[in-house]
Structure formats: structure tokens, C-alpha cells
Length: 171
Image (tube, rainbow, N blue to C red; front, side, top):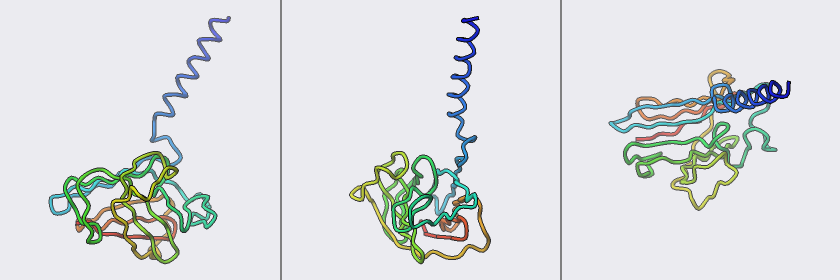
């Protein structure tokens, strides 16, 4: 009987461990946006939180904090990778893989490319910023339940969630 109980316990622990490794089963599943623009590949890896009836642009910072650094998605830090040197909103960025942070605002957002790829935005350090740009926030054409990032063939990166859309350009 003891052996059966120990075996069952170990089996449950193993199942739980493997289930946690399957990121597609998370409430905010992983996603990727990728596009080649002028021979340069742009890849963004992020997780897709859902609105779930919440006020996502929360000044208190419970979901996506207005005026505070946000990891631009959920779970791990969102990353952006450039296969070659690029210009982000006209500012040079060397090829490589970076953290993509944002500071949501009511009218404008700050888009941040940062050297520090860690978990979330908890250990964000401004001195590790590579570039910061401010771009306008617009009303989305339709309500978007899941956070989504898309890259056009012209290098326009669009981030849409709830009723908000924010774009920046990479060439």
C-alpha cells in the first residue's frame, strides 16, 4: 500500500512539473510575430494576456500600469530580435536580441529597447536602455481580447489590446 501511495504521489508531481513546462497551456500563451523587412528579419516573442473583463490600462498597475514600465505582454519579458542593424523610429539599433518594454500612457506610449532580458519587468534598469521612442496611442478599430503584436512588410510593428493600438516602425 505504501509503495502504491509513493508511486501515485511521484506520478502526480511529474505530471505537474511537465504541465508547467508546456507554455501553450498557460492562461497567457506564448506567441511570435516575425517579418522580413528589407532583408532584415524582425522577431518578437511575447505572451498574450487576455482582458478577461478587467480594466487593463490600470493606473494602479494591476495589469498594464499607466505611466510605469510594462513587460509588454505577460510571463517572461517580451523579446525583440533583429538579424541586422536597424532603425527604430529613425534611431539606430545594432543587430541582436533585446527586451521590449513599454510605458503605456493615455495619449502616448514610450517604446523601450533594453539589454536586460530577465523575467517580467521586475528587474528593469533604465541604464540598460538601448533606445527609447515616444509614439502615439490610438483607439483600436475593434476590441481585442488577447494582446497581439503584428509586423507589416513595411516594418510597422502594431501592438493591440483591449481598445488601444500602438505602432512603431523598424527599417
